[in-house]
Structure formats: structure tokens, C-alpha cells
Length: 286
Figure 1 (cartoon, one colour):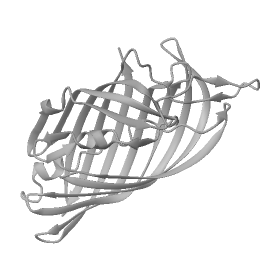
Figure 2 (cartoon, rainbow, N blue to C red):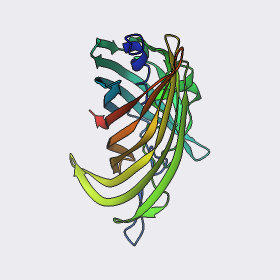
Figure 3 (cartoon, one colour):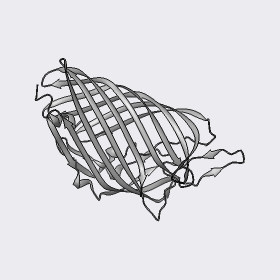
Figure 4 (cartoon, rainbow, N blue to C red):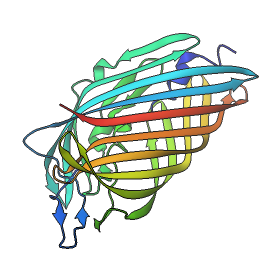
């Protein structure tokens, strides 16, 4: 049983996890158009803190695993190409740790620090080119190699197209697919969104967007000769604070809960239930 529950096996499952081209535009009716527009002369620094509590019921025995990850990066604009925004991203720091009944593992991912790449997004924040990030290898203790694109393929919150007013609602559906040397993920997600109005954040006027999230997530990985699949539906919420004047988001908080199963199909078949409570906060830092 300890072989099946090896820390490294579960550690490999934890890699999961709007930049504007134009300034804010107001119409005479008071509507606002939200678009990304990062500055070119000064980098915007972000930090993302993510926590996962993974609870498993294995043959009547409850096991809890806590995962903590941190990502710090600096972003600035490298200009507009075909109406999309090229961004230079520098990874300033990266950290991951796992705390389980078998002990604690992980730490600072030093080979990620200082890596720089160019990525492209639409004015509404959709990531459309991460080819440079995919070439940057990052080794994770107990999990093996991954690449920088895994941390940025859904980094920027998507914005609504066109002008909106407080009270405006809209829905979005998307499918996110990622693949690295150590694992792959497919996530189908629906978000029901509402522009709540404006909120002051340290003297900056921000548009506040709330979202109700739902969908399905499937993660497949191989570890120590085992084929492992984590799958199941999830739901949650998101709060986004976006500065129309600055052209980028100041903070996003995402909370989700996934209830599903862990299936091990090699060398023997085994399946047990799992609940994953996740919270991620991504915000600008000085």
C-alpha cells in the first residue's frame, strides 16, 4: 500500500495549476470596455499563492495531503502584433511543497528562477502562443521535468468582448489542455459572470467581476511505473479586480472543490474517492 501512496506519486499530480492592447474606452452612455494593456517601460510584478487540500478515502482509511505552491513573475509589453499583445515574462521565484502522512517534500525550484520568455495574448486575455515557454524545462522533485508553459497556459483572466455596464452578465465555456513530460490535463469549464461594478483597491479604481465556475477535470500521470488518473467534476467561484486605467488585473481569487476518483491502472487496478479543495490568489505586488 505504501508503494501506491508514495509521496512522489501524489506530488506529480499537483502541477496544475489580460493584458491590454488598448487603453480604457468610455462611451457617452457610461459603458466601459476592458482590455489588457501592460506597460512597456516598467514590469508589473505578480505573485500567485495556491493551496490544495487533497482528502482520500483508501479502503476506509482517510488520508490528507496538503500542497502549497508559489509563483512570482514580472510582466511587461513587447508590443502589438496582428492586434495581439506580445508579453515578456520573467519567472522571479517558484516554490512547491507537499505535506502528507509520509512527511514533507519539495522546496524552491531554483532552475526556474530567472527564466524569460515571450508569450502572446489577445486584448481580452486569451493565451494564444506559449511556444517559447514550452521550451523552458523545469525539474520538480519527485515528479520529473515539466515546462514553463504549464504555469501560464491559463494565467490571464478572460475579459468580456465589447462595452459593458455594471449588472451585465455573460457566460463562457472553454476547454483547457496541457501536456508535459510528466503529466497531462484536460479541463472543460463553464463560467457564469457578472460585472458587479467598481471597487477601490489601494486608490485604484477596479472593475469587479464575479464568476460561478463548474466543469470537469482529468489529470493523467505516470510515476514509479504506475499509471494514475485523477478525474471528476468541480465547482467554485472567482473574483476578479481589473483596472481599466492601467490595463491589467490587480487581483484574482479562485476557489474550487473537486469530488472524484483516483484510478491506478498499472501494475494493478485500484480506485478510491478523492476530494480536492483548492484556493488560488494571484495579485500585483510592489
